[in-house]
Length: 202
Image 1: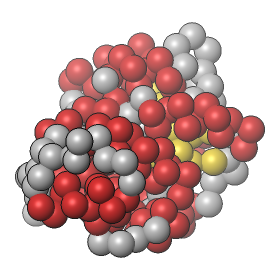
Image 2: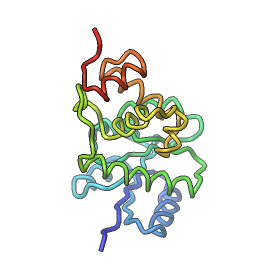
Image 3: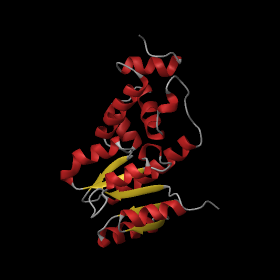
C-alpha cells in the first residue's frame, strides 16, 4: 500500500490553514500545518514533507527567510509560495531562492490540487535519478532539470509552464538561471550543451 504524500502548510492565518488542510486531506494527503517559521522549521527536522505551501507574508520570519534557511534550491520537496496578487515581484524573488512556483490568492481549488500533484510526481522522479548528465548538470536543481527537459524538447515558456503546471514567468526565471549556470548564450547553445555533452563554446 502506497503511503500518502505529506504536505506542510505554513500560514499565520488560521482560516487559510484550515481551508487548505481540509482540501488536501480530502484529496488523500497527510497534512501538517504551522503558524510560523519556528514551528515549521522544527517540523521539517522531524519529517521531510513531499510538498510545502508557504505564505510569503508572516509576522517574524517571512517566506523568503524560510526558503533561505532551508537552502530552498536543494530542498528535496517542491515549495510553493502563497502570495497575494500584489506580491508578484516578491514571488519571483522566491523562485530565485528555490521556490518551485507561486500560488496566487484567491485560490483556484482544482488548479492547486493539480499543480501540487504534478510537482510531487516530477520531483520524486528527479530525486530518483532520472537525470541527464552533461557539463554543469551537477549544478542544476531538480526543478531546473525539469524546465531544461522541456526546453530541449522545444517547448516555449508558455508550453513548458503548462506541462509542468507552473507559470510562464516561473519558467522564464528558471531558464535564465539554467543558461547562466551552464554558460549558454542562447537556447540553441543550451540544447547543444545538453544533447552533445560538449562544454559551452568559447
